[in-house]
Amino acid sequence: MDAAGKDGTIKHVMSGVNPQGCQVCSFKAPSAEELNHDFLWRCVKQLPEKGRIGIFNRSYYEEVLVTRVHPNLLDYQKLPGWPVSKEKMEEFWKQRYSDINHFEQHLNITGPLS
Image 1 (cartoon, rainbow, N blue to C red):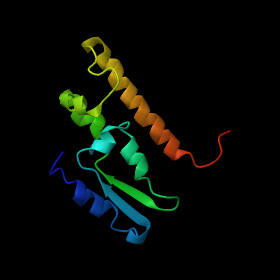
Image 2 (image 1 turned 30 degrees about the vertical axis):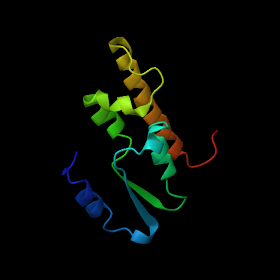
Image 3 (image 1 turned 90 degrees about the vertical axis):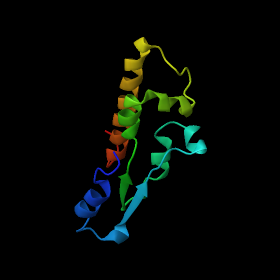
């Protein structure tokens, strides 16, 4: 993921947007406080207020990319019942994908639910 051109892509895509309406948040390795919470918690804390554009340089997607390739990184997240058996591992990943989908659906709500 490093040197994949994320910064250059952000600069290019956002070049026509007034920077006063944008905020960029770069995520590093999770802090001790962040590890005490759900993997989406630190992203929720950085959401922009209404009317602003938020750009995440790295995000919760790494929690289903990097940690799937290197599941030992999950050992530090203080997950209840972790480590899971190999039989439960696929269920674990499906739940993470579901959490991300629900989070993004929540962000996409533009008016009252009908």
